[in-house]
Image 1 (cartoon, helix red, strand yellow):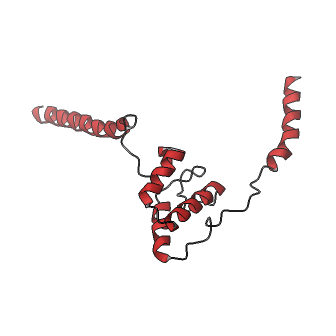
Image 2: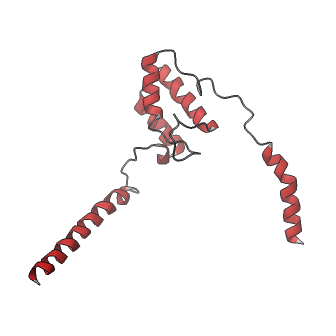
Image 3: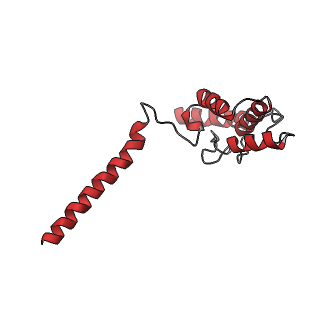
Length: 138
């Protein structure tokens, strides 16, 4: 009985979900470059270092996701207004979290991610040295 109700609900909800497509037109600078080539180069350089939140493996410069277009628009608008690219990066990190940046920061919560690989290398080197010393003595 419950399974039938869930199936019926899914059939009713499916068309609604299909219509939930992004109906808003893209932001003005989502797919259009800035007129000033120097400013566009700054914007492009910054956009290549920011991760698309939907695609996860693409930068916002390469992604066709609507949110990436919105982020490109914001970057271009702020660059065009004369804002510093690093200030824009910090604003996006504050808004979307550290995940948006391909250049992660070392913080109190992320330092183990940077320290553990180094520690593993030290342990592996010690184990290899010990094994080689045993082999040499044998």
